[in-house]
Amino acid sequence: MTRATPVSRPDLVGRRPAPRWATRLAHAIPFLVLPSSVWRLAVAFGFPMGQLTDSGQPWVCRGWSSVYVAVISLLSEAAALTAFGLVQPLGEEVPRWVPRFGGRAVRPTVVLIAAALGSVALVLIWTVGFWDAWTGHRMNNMANTSWQAVFIACYGPLNLWGPSLLVLTWAYRRRVAGSAG
Image 1 (cartoon, rainbow, N blue to C red):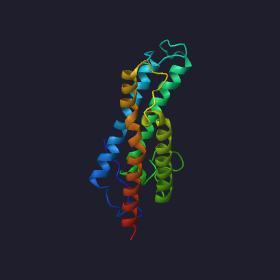
Image 2: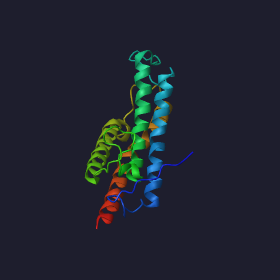
Image 3: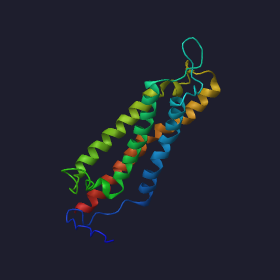
Image 4: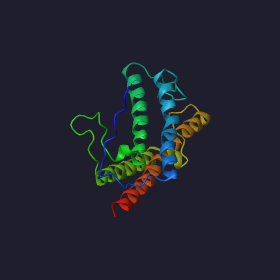
């Protein structure tokens, strides 16, 4: 078995590696998303997780709603994994398996714009999504305050996803700008 020789990329030569703290933060982001994904998967598999219907009965997710909730969990974890692109070569070169674009250098401006917009969107989504929790209002669809606390413990870490991604975006910007000169 022979190994393929890596192709030398003059446009990527001299790029500084990501700082260790940035790499650690990129590895932490999927774990910030994981508790909410586990919550949603429990819901998708029929556990009410303290949620109530309008009539006060435990709410159980069934049918296509279960599939939708499970897919949302998987997609959110996949989105969290994109943070690695800011600290690994994935953010500098399109993977070779991608048809037509594989092996091409990624323009840092594209990465910066996508990451910055994603960061801001996550901050807005989770600030608005958690407004009741942050302002101390009881969430009416929860069976009791214990379930509300569990919900907040599972979804609260999502509030750190956007700011963490923004910090990684800043580190990526400093890294690619510092290697350009």
